Length: 286
Image (cartoon, rainbow, N blue to C red; front, side, top):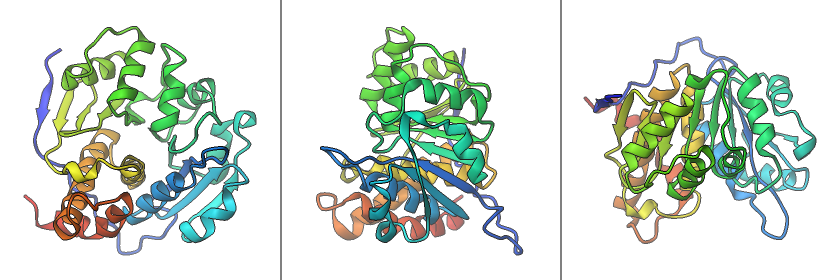
């Protein structure tokens, strides 16, 4: 299939003057874990990024032991207990009234691939699947999504290789555009293959991001991207367009941070600081 190469970046929808928090995106972040290696920072990065990207309401579903740590890290979000393998993730999303579920950052093995497959088959809202949720999904092999156009997978190259292997596709992950497009065509979902020149594709269209820099090669920046894309879907953007705009503005924030702080010292929380400026700069593009 010949791909349509996209070069323009979608515009952020205008927010109505009478908007309230209930109509600009309710985002459920399923993330975080505590154990021998704690992953408390991951859900806070994703949730704060969603809020900085315009989400009206954010709730973090996580282990009870993680919840007390989040009060100071994400004061603008709520939390709820996630019992892990005992939970029906769709029921958790419906209880919150989520428009979008962002799942994976810092989860470790607290949810299974089967739980994610069930979510793909029963939740009709937006889904952004990242990190440990991708790794769990890769163990399932072939799977299907009932509303694939609403789903965004955000693998780094190692996670992309696991997804390809799980599907039985013998593709070279170094051929970034080809392997991302082939996987999107097989599954019907949107793929965001992260790295220098992040690739976004739905199997028909393909966009290669031009923003960002090597200073963003640091832990946590992917968690922030997950939150940005989820928030944009929550603001009624098509998932593919949200992914394109998300990687663009995420890179813009990284470029501004690098200009002020230098690439060597850049850390993920710096992107949160510069996301407002990146969104503001969008008004002057094009």
